[in-house]
Length: 127
Image (tube, rainbow, N blue to C red; front, side, top):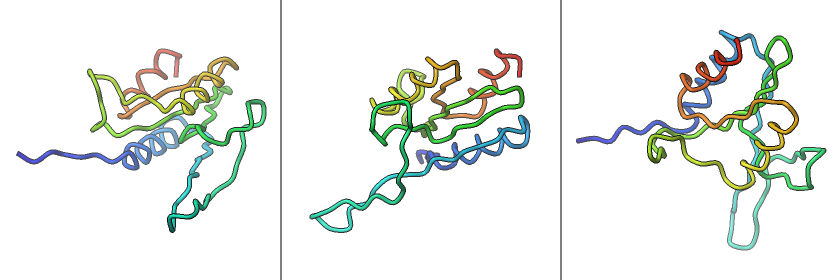
């Protein structure tokens, strides 16, 4: 029996496509991280900072989107292969902190591993 794997990148692409085509969202794609080319150093390949939080640059959601009407979405995408007990994989502590900051400011913060989860959450909010 072959295990089917769906990478996080496929979920992310599907979510972006859905937001653009169905919801006409304005999207800011956050793609940052670091590589370790040798044992002595890490090289950061994108620098950004969420002003209004602490000085940490870690944890910003994969996608920030604004829907018509002004609803702000912060979406963390996970591979469905990482599900536990029927739920999407948990965000890292830094990601959870960012998601909570978005919620505290009136935005919608989600962790999804399938576009249907996003559709369901937006339908609950009248979209």
